[in-house]
Length: 82
Image (cartoon, rainbow, N blue to C red; front, side, top):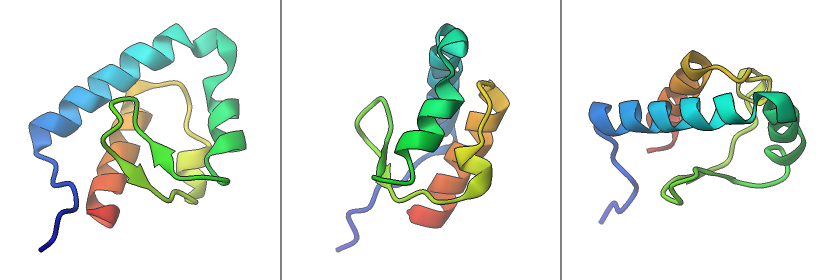
């Protein structure tokens, strides 16, 4: 039985909004730098605790603190790692 996460479009949109809020709060703490430092070493875990996936894609690691970037990246995770 395939027990991988299956995400609806609405769930992805909600996570994008959540990431947008978080990154706006952390814009001054260089969130993208922390992502570059941590993500190559371990699985990416969403703040909801729901998604775990290996991420080594340069455009993800270079993500800016911007909601649209996270929206695209979450969609990539959904498509490639479901």
